[in-house]
Length: 335
Length: 266
Image (cartoon, rainbow over all chains, first blue to last red; front, side, top):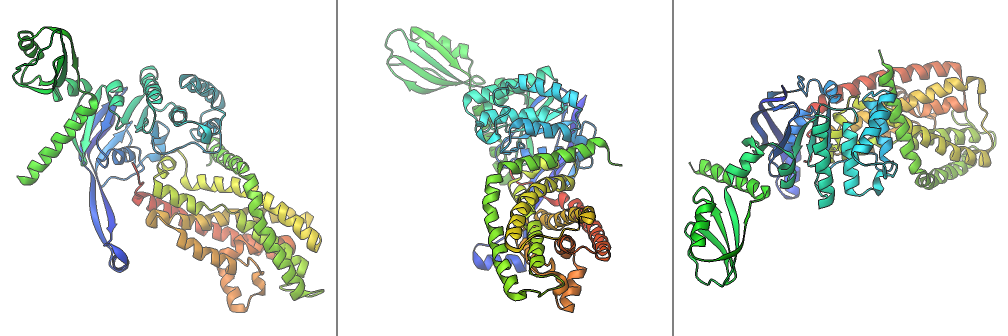
């Protein structure tokens, strides 16, 4: 069952423009001019119950605008959307009881007070009865391992600790869908791993549908089974994460260590990145030539001591998708 | 009908707002130096101008200073939520406020009441001690104090509505400070912050009677220092009418503004 249904969703922002300098300021005051920016261009997709979906794209691609429309805080210019059967911008308050949001660059916690005070407030805001509230706080404190700092003022928490509290605060009311907008932004590696583990547990143990945006390839690679890539307001790819890895970008890096020095080497259809007497590093596009084919050619010329094959990181995959989308855009513009 | 759950959430907002303010209590006492300075200047002024036996709008120098304690305390205890709303719109933090199951306006009213309450009590304590030591005690109409407290409570709501309706201009202009600069000057004059509006020339007095500022600042202070039933009914009626008008304006502004607010930031 689809919990999010988006159909031709469209958002245009109308913004005032101003020429530089004082003259421009006066002109803007007397004769304001406006420009229109299309942030989201009629996108359509659906998210099934219990899915953990990555919604990614470069800055200004339209990710956050889409989330804001799906949570009801922005009205679209056109198109329709339903979240849990409700039109978000028409039933914002009703929907709020069943969804949660985390905006990685903003905070919902009271800065000078301990997180537990914000939890208590949110318990009242979501009208959770006191017995259920106590039980739920116990659960999230255990799940997110908050007991050591739940009573410490938020201003004294590390970014990682604060983000754990932010996510915990967003799930107190057991939302069916949670929108995570860059939840790992600015975190160190250890904190990122912790947040990823928690998101995964949230999805698996509580069956919460998760709509995740992130610039971190690791978040997508380690968490999501499906990826939607948005660029310039358009969806340019909607596919399983494994599809990206195996089909979208097929280049692999092969590192070979020789048993004996080999100054001369001839390999067809590969890009040699580094070649010394002791080894070679090259890139293969498996669509052009299989790894087996390259290795057969290699073994015919040299004895090897060690071989490793590196898969491209998701970051490279994503960069490639953006790059190809940009190329298509340029070709369209020329055409 | 207001459900218990609804009421509880707003009471909780008021409580956390009050608790949050307690963190700043030391800062707050430091800022009260300004209140003491103003009261000191005016205590000297009223002593010189009114002397022994002189009155202004029916108040002697002691009454005038106590009147000013209450007007000043109302004004400086009013939280500057226009800045908060403006900052929320600019930074996009408003996203967290808009996607909650509560009324944005009632949320801020509750927060206003919590913060106003603690600021009012601490400012009043400081102002009252100063006025008592310099001018002597206030003749409190103890039997009618309940009415005065009702009037002060309505004034608290009224000051919120006056400020918040302007704060919502941030949905259109992002920076709402210029409107507040004008409004604060109007409160000085038509709110009778330094002098009861009854002492104004006829034209100015009529204008101040027609505006809400008087009912939010001057009128409850006047009731406190010079209680009169006829004046009380007039004040309560004015406060009720203005609270209704400003509630409708605020609700309409929010409905319209929330549709066009950009919610900046990623």
